[in-house]
Image 1 (tube, rainbow, N blue to C red):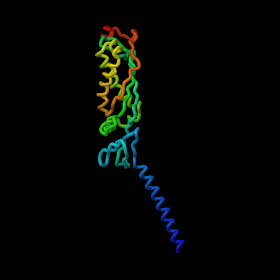
Image 2 (image 1 turned 90 degrees about the vertical axis):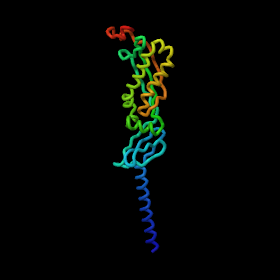
Image 3 (image 1 turned 60 degrees about the vertical axis):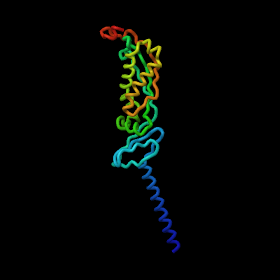
Length: 203
């Protein structure tokens, strides 16, 4: 009798261990945790939930899961030769700049980034392709208001204005511009000035 009791206890113990292992596996599979580097947005059943510090259950077929990269991403822009920027005094300037971008660490910004950028925040090359137009627009618009000498002598002012211009556009995607660095700025070689172009002719 005691042998049968011990046998039943061992059987139930094995069943309990197997059940615990299965439950732990299922919970680990369904429960997603955010980290310092990656937040996520869960949509679907029970509405949207933004997870920055913590975790949430993501059920297959019921929820959609969008990770959002929270790291600072460097994005380089080069405008030179035929693509050089034109200044207020109609000169062409070769310019190289580095923009350091990240998703703002707020629930609203993470939600906007997930909605407008999706998983591209996890793929810097795709994100660069999407955002480069905004950076180029900021570089060109501010350059058109300054002479080449002003851009060179007041580089800090130029950088600050470019940053303010680009930051406003990036905010629409839940992004913030941490910093801007102008790594090179010089007059474009004259061979790239087109005499039939009004701006180049004036320059």
